Image (tube, rainbow, N blue to C red; front, side):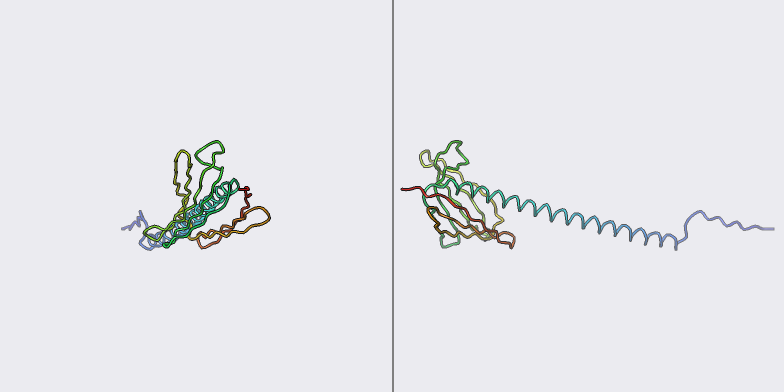
Length: 175
């Protein structure tokens, strides 16, 4: 009598294919969840960085304007550069209240990209520093009006297709 022994030592082709399909579905699901997580994380970190940059620029401009001496000087040249200059006692170079001339320059470069600079100049020593603040601003507008005995400046920044506006009052010293 002959006995045929059925030795199954592995998986059949159908079992391997089904396991491969199930594993592929699980791996694709995990990949989709992970890629969505990375996208959301990147979106919120970029947004946080942008808001921090905007906040720091606005705080710096407000501190400069709050300590303003005299009048604002505004100029726009033929190639789209915008200059806002004024004297202030708020200095990034000097610890004491040395009057300095501050110019905010919104400059267009060769690639039609805009950069906002802060230029500080101390007239007696001739020390001058030009600091690039950001290249994320698409447009900037300045509006001026007088209320009682103070100048009010309204600054509108367009960043990432959103418009941010703030106003700052500064006292006028009698000349």
